[in-house]
Image 1 (cartoon, one colour):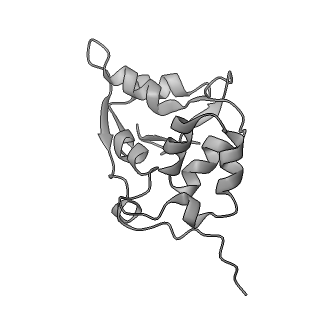
Image 2: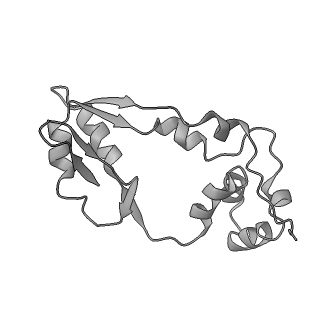
Image 3: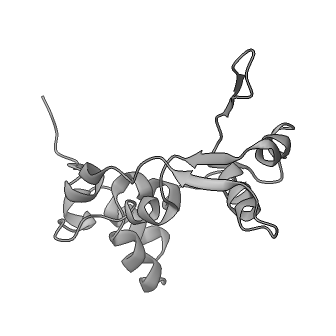
Length: 148
């Protein structure tokens, strides 16, 4: 997405976090980053990555996903380290790890961050908000319980 406010120097570009592997970024991305004085990121990457893991004290995935967890264990029968890593993820994050999704490349954020570290100093980055606190503090309430 790319928007320009008529009669101004304001441009707004929406980005994808990832793109299909080997596909180029939109043609205007490099120009937009070069023209920008400030780029506002949606959230801090560290906080976002941390939000992919279940909060401390959450019940194990094997308890919350009694039908799916045995299948996940079956997919990685000789990889205890991967299973340990997967068992700490939130269910929504787990799906990207265990499903055979299409290969992806990093999206626009990595390019913007690299430009901001350029010498001479490039574009200034600013984070709009931190990862929502409710994502960090609450359980994700996912289970295989049947509903009627």
